[in-house]
Length: 186
Image (cartoon, rainbow, N blue to C red):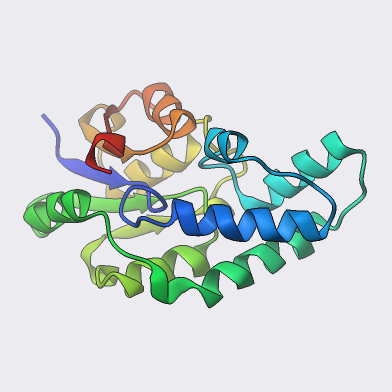
C-alpha cells in the first residue's frame, strides 16, 4: 500500500531540464569545457558542484567547483520566468494533496528547488523538501529518497517515487521504493 509520494523536481515537477542545459552549456563553455546534451541528461540528479568537479577533472582543468556551480545556478535563476510545470505530474500531486504524505527529493540545491516550486505555484503542497545539502551521497545512491521517507515517517516500501532520470530511478530502486518514470509525460 502506497502511503507517500516523493517527487523529484527538475524534469519531474518542472520542465526545467532544457533551461538547465542551456545554462550549463554556456557556463561550461566560458571555462573551456564542452558539455553535450546526452552527457547532461545522463548526469540528471547529480548536484551541480559535483558535475563541475567531474567535468573539470575529465578536461584536466582546475576549477573552483562551488564557484562555477554558483555561476551556472545564477544563470538559471535569471531565466526562471521561462519555467513551466509538467502539467501531468503536477496534476498527480494536486490530486493527492492532503490525501497522502508528499515530499520533494532532489539532487538540486535548496534555494533553486524552492524557487522552482514557487514559480509553478506548489510551494506549500509538500510535507518536506530534501535537497543536495541534506545527504552526503547523491543519486544513484538512495539517500535522498530514504531521507524523505524518514522525514515523512513512512517505510520505504510504502513510498512511490516520480522521477525523470536513470540515476533517479536507480536511486528509488535501491531505496526499495516503487517508482514512476515521468518521461512519458513530457
